[in-house]
Image 1: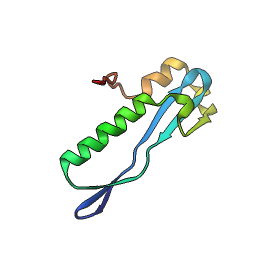
Image 2: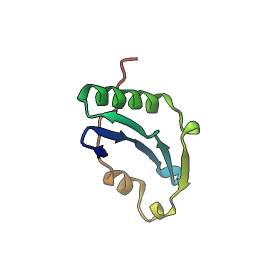
Image 3: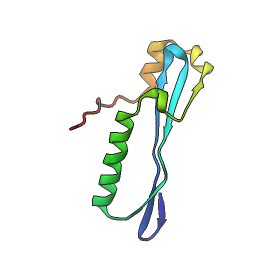
Image 4: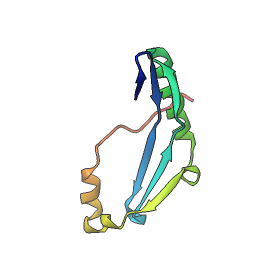
Length: 91
């Protein structure tokens, strides 16, 4: 988010939904300030991406049971999600 004319605040929220367990796993990234510099922001986003890939679910911040999913079949629930490519890391 934009903090002022020359600075941004970056904070990520990642989630993974496990229909079979009716559970949403969350990971909240640390809030970090950044100058409005594309190279600095790109590096911060890459660092956050590498962190989320390396962090197992047992180390995520939170999980919650979402019983409202039970009103959909697994196929219906999956069809509601956006289709994104699988992440690839250089490391």
